[in-house]
Image (cartoon, rainbow, N blue to C red):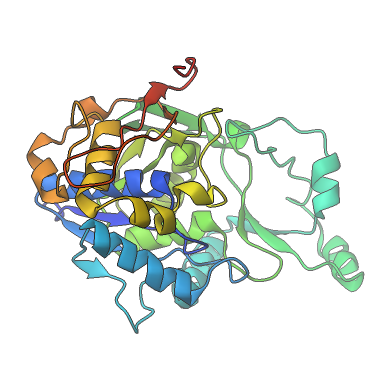
Length: 335
C-alpha cells in the first residue's frame, strides 16, 4: 500500500529567511501541491545559540505572507514540531543504534581533528580517520579522567548507498570512503543534524524531501540512518542554489536579500513571480499567486544549474517584476 504524499519545509530559525530559502520553500510547496499531497512545517532549531523563538514566529509569518500554507506541523504556541523539543525521539533513535553496536565515543578535540592527515569528503569536510573506533575501556577511562567529554560517532560500513534524485539523477556514495564515521551527538549532548533529520523524516512519514543541492552529499548518510532505524526512504529532489553576483552562496548574513527588505520592496504576488521566473516556470517576472503556478510546475523546467543574481531594477508594484537578472553559475554576469 502506497503512503500518502507528504512533503516538508524544514528551515532553521537562526535569522530572517533570505531569497534562497524562499526559492527552496516555493519549489517544495509546488512539488507536493502538484501531487495532491500534504505539506508539513518543521523548525530545525537544534542549535540553542543560533536559533530563537522570535525567529521561528517571524519565519512562519513570512511564509504565510507569501501564500505558502501548510497542513501539518508547527503552530503558534506549540513545540511538537520544533527539533529543540524532540530530544526524547532522538534519544530513542540513538539508543536503537547503540543497541546495534553502531556507535562509539570519540574523544578527539577539534585541534586534533584539524591536524589529522585525512582525505576530504565530497562536501569538503574531513573524513574521520577512526582513531577512537576501537579504544579499550582503560583508554576511555584515562581520557575521561583527564576531563575529555566524548562526542558519539556512528560506525559506517564499507557500503555503497545509491539513490536517484529527481533533479540531479543517479547518485552514490561509499560511506567509509566518502564521508567516514560521522557524529550523531556532540560532546555537549546536542544531537547532530544527520540523526535529527533522519529520525524526524522517518517518524513524520515524509515521502518528498525538497531542499538545496548543498545538502545532496548528506543524503546517503540520512538514507543509511533511515534504513538502520527501520523507516521507509523518501524521494529526494535537490534544487539549484541562488548565488550572489560574485558567485557566493546566499546566507542570512546577506541582509539586502532577507525577508525584512524584500517585504518592503515587493508585494507577495510580485515576489512570487520573481521566484517563479528564476525557477524557469515563467518566461518573465509577473505578479502571480503560488496556487496559479501549480499547473505550470515540472522539475525539468527547474533544471540543475545554480542561478547567479546580478541585479535589481524596476518598481515593486503588482504586475511589474523587478527583473532580477540571472545567469547560470560559472558564466560571466552581464554588464
